[in-house]
Amino acid sequence: MTREERPEAAKLGWKLQRSDTRFENKVLRLREDQLEVPKKGQTAFAYAVKGAAVIIVPVTADGQMVLLRQFRYPVDEWCLEVPAGTTRDTGDTPLEEVAAKELKEEIGATFERLEKVGSFFSNSSLSDEECHVFLALGTTLSEKPKPEPMESIEILLTPLAEAVAMVRQGRMKTGPSALAVLLSDEKLRAHGII
Image 1 (cartoon, rainbow, N blue to C red):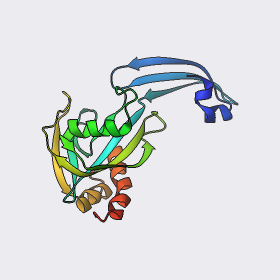
Image 2 (spheres, rainbow, N blue to C red):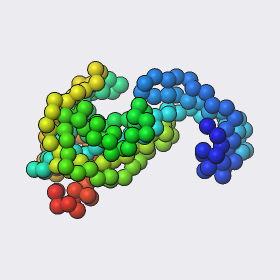
Image 3 (cartoon, one colour):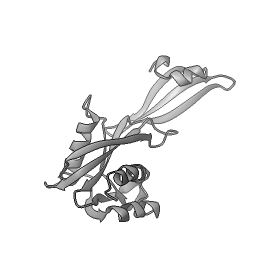
Image 4 (cartoon, rainbow, N blue to C red):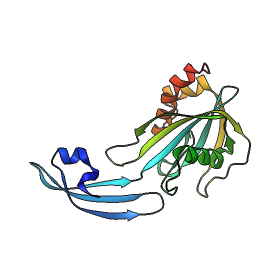
């Protein structure tokens, strides 16, 4: 990576001396940058290189949100989430197409309309991952899901107001999913769905 790729760091006088990949697999890459920082000298900064992700809030025509109850090994818990996926292996595929692919794979769904809600960084101190949130309106569970080998997923149809309440009560503990639902709340209200 060149200095020009980090214009805000350059404005602060941060200079990239070297960058090394410390670990890499199909899910993430752990990178360590050696930096020259004004008044602090040489320092190392490690972070996960994950790139863009999509998070989809699927809503059926009869006003239910499609939630996932998914086992997550790192926390050894079943977590409430909405469908999501990374763009790491999708090349230049448009985010909308990645979102449609994730819906089909994770919950076997199609939709009538896909709306961009916004984006956020999942953990800006440890990763470069930017999460792009989409609202999938008129979602239909029409096919058998095609989960990845390590995915254990249950599909839950939940009334919208109840799903939003679950987030506000802290029952959806996966941060990116919870924030995606909250960010979608205003659009759902504007459409008169909640």
